[in-house]
Image (cartoon, rainbow over all chains, first blue to last red):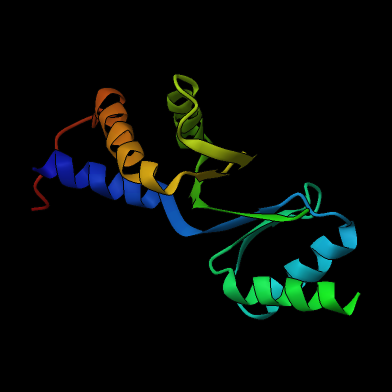
Length: 74
Length: 72
């Protein structure tokens, strides 16, 4: 039992999981930058890579709406 | 065109990540995107399986050096 608890602790310390959405394949660097900073602003940004132009967000509804309104404005 | 892919972000140390990459290499049915040396995105329905496999793997390799000693 002690071994099992130790393994369980080990795994929890070593691995953190967050459910959400990976945003990728942006048309332009600007589109990436805008959506990424919006995600950060509303507190859903979990991970990002400016180099690879990808980010991971915990929620997508507001980001989807933001993209839609951005597309409309263009 | 930008895409939003549903998944689970895993943050772990490189040693654990390499085990996950190895587990995925058999059928390529776990990883959605390999992000960097400490992050990857996996399929939501595979997280449970992955944790189980990882635990099995840790059991194989992880041996406490000595039994827990009594504190007193």
